[in-house]
Image 1 (cartoon, rainbow, N blue to C red):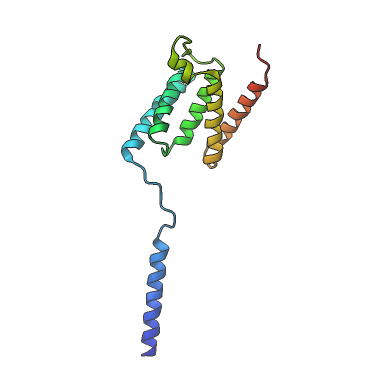
Image 2 (image 1 turned 90 degrees about the vertical axis):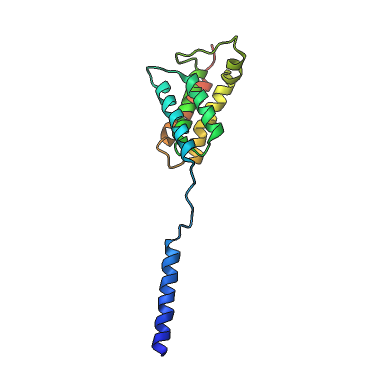
Length: 156
């Protein structure tokens, strides 16, 4: 009788341990499949616009703004932040094929030099701070250094 009691307690203990071992202590982020697909589309379009051939940095930023406002939990936000950060920096340096129209009030608000520099630093810093395991961290750090060096240059 005593052996049966010990065996029953041992079996209950093992069953309890195995149930707890199967629990995931940190739940995965729940991602909306529709929002993920939309954000992925925007990222793909932005990546095409970012290529050396197109250099459509304004388009990149508009796609990024839309995605970041609607779905900041996007699974590839680190990549999008990098592309947006470098696009902001390049536009602040008057690079790219899309020019900022000084007569267009929206252009002057969204693409003002000071805002572009601030955004570039913020986006690249966010990768380093929020996504330390990202494959874009090293490139983001290089971009931040490039911005710092650019700001140190005297303006002509």
